[in-house]
Structure formats: C-alpha cells, structure tokens
Image 1: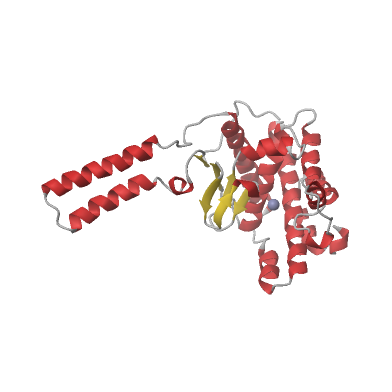
Image 2: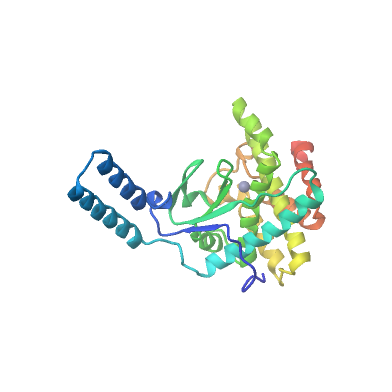
Length: 291
Ligand SMILES: [Zn+2]
C-alpha cells in the first residue's frame, strides 16, 4: 500500500505508554488544581498557598515525566494517521454523494498500550482493535499488528489497513443507525438472534471496508501488487471458524458473532467490487443462510 509521506489525519490521540488513569487526561494536572482549590477554600495563609503551589508543581512534574505516548512519531502512528485520513476523505465524499440529509462526522482514534479507559468500559489490547459507539472512538494497540502477522498469519500493510477500515465502518454504521437491530436483538435476550444480528453487522462492516478500498484506490491509487491478497487473507484468517480452530475449540456455527472466513472474504470482495454504499443493506434483508 502506498502510504509513506501522504496526508495524515489530525484525529489520532497517541496515548501509548500512558497508564489508563493518565490516558484519561493527565491525572497530575487535575490533582494539582484540586490541591490548590482545597487550600484556597480552607482559607490557607501565604505559607499554605506556597506549600500547595509546590505540591501542584511536583504533581505536574511527575505527570510530565510519565512516559507519555504523545510525540512518538513512528511508522505505526504515521500509517494509522494516513489510513484514517483516507477514510475521512472517502466517507465524507460518499456521505455527500450517496446519503441524503446526513454528513460524515470524523471519528477519533486512540492508540494505546495494554489497556485504556473508554466510554464503553475498560479497553484491553487482548480484545483487538475496537470501536466504542458511546464516544465515537476507535481504539487500537498497535502491537495487534504484530499479532495479526505472527499469530494470525496475516502479514502486510494492507491487511492492517483493512482492520482499521473495518473499525471505521462500525463508526459509519453508528452514524447511519445500522446497528439498531443488533442492539434490539441484544436487549431481547435471544442469544441466537443476537449472534446472527452481530454476524450481519460484522459482515456489513467488511463490505463497507471493501467499499472504502474501492474508492480510496480510485481516488489515490493506494493499492500495490499483492495488497488485495493481503486483505483477503486477513479476512480469511480472522473468521470465527478459523479463530475457533486456532484456539483448539469445536467450530460452533450458532456462536459465530463475526461470520465464517468464507463469508468475511465474500462480503469484503463484494464491497470492493461494488463501491456502492447502498448495497450494504442486503446484509439485513437476505435470509441468514444466504449470507
Ligand atoms: Zn467488527
């Protein structure tokens, strides 16, 4: 994939190396303000104020010394920012051209290490990249990309771009309320229906990732030889059946939540060929055994 030196998104928050508390927004600074306020309200004299000032400075120094991720401008960050920018320009254009009465709102994307706080609860690297609809944010621990290459045998930059595009697709679904039937099924407590709705939503995200790739290539010529194969291989390696087999579990179709490898490849390819956002509605109109 052609990505080096291209335009980058300004919506990436780099919180790698920060503890989850620090990642929530520099705990030191907030604590320092609280210390100063408490002393003021308690009517502390000049000496107390001085002490409070020192305490505040210490806390701020400690916050500054914490291994903040902000500013680590490495390949991972450049890559994520370029792919996110490509999704912003393409989805803005597709919303303008294909969706009446809605305009695209760019999501934020947080890079983190190990764990972080999200509006959807604690986020763990072990969950893989995910999207939280409550704060409209995508969360990625970039060590997942190594995992993708080594543990899931899905190497290559376009395999990574596909994963990011899939998470952005969940944001598109959220903006267009495509996730509503899934939430309703979950609320009903019907486990099988809930899993089936989840599979439809996930395959739709694969389709939308394909729609994005279609337009990004037309617009910017991002694809190089072998890129398509990388993304298709990634979709194939992270199907529910492939993951269950890799984990030594029995393949149980009823507990699928993302779709089989064959389905994920099929819908990604369909999106790629079609480039038409409206075609993604099929995912909720076709009978389940025809997906
Ligand atoms: Zn997903």
